[in-house]
Image (tube, rainbow, N blue to C red):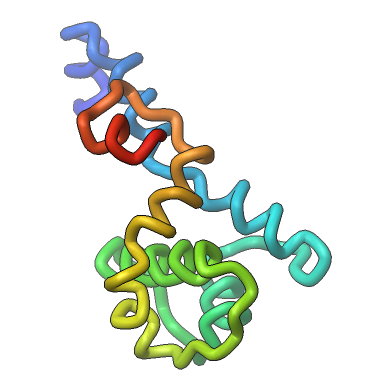
Length: 120
């Protein structure tokens, strides 16, 4: 029903660009971890990079914070002094570093003032 309404109002292409531009963390993870990890999925990346135990990613509510923490970890380069539950707190001040790392991997549907300010 959603796809039909997007097609009917000629919004399917725009919606597709937004979805593609959300931020493709796979490319960044593959580039950073190509020598150590052969399969890139959220569970494995959370376990290897964040030292977290068995987490279940059954809902978007669980996947979103883990995805942010993984992106933040990849943005801070090769530091290994991260504690699993304290990752989000550590990156509160490093948001611009994260933005600089993620910008080359996104395909925005349209340019916003935020992107212009951060040279994305």
